[in-house]
Length: 128
Image (cartoon, rainbow, N blue to C red; front, side):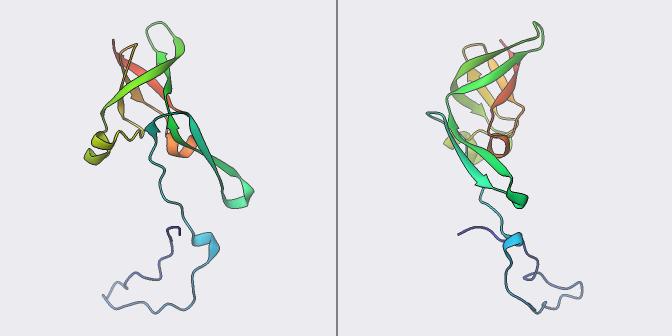
C-alpha cells in the first residue's frame, strides 16, 4: 500500500465537495518516507518516474564528515543522534534526516544530505 497524491478528495473554493470523475492513476502514486536509523548499512532501491532508480538509505553506521577548517573529509562512525529539529519524535527514535545533529568520535556533526532521498549520509563538523 502506498500513498496517493491526487487531489480528487479536496473541496472547491466555495466549500462544496468535488465529484471524483475517475479513479486513481499510477502517476499519482507516492511512497512512504524512509526513516533512516543507526544500524548495519542497508539501502533500498525504488523505481521512479521514467524508469529512474532512487536509492534510499534505510540504516547506516557511518557518516562522511567534512571539516571546513582543514578541508578534508573522513568516514566516521556515528555514536548517537543528539537532536533532530524536524520532529521531536525522531529524537527519541533515533531517526536521521537533513539537519540532524549527530555525535561522532570527531565531534558534533550536522547532516547536510537527505539520506531517504539520495542514499548517502554527508555532514559538516559543527564542534569538536
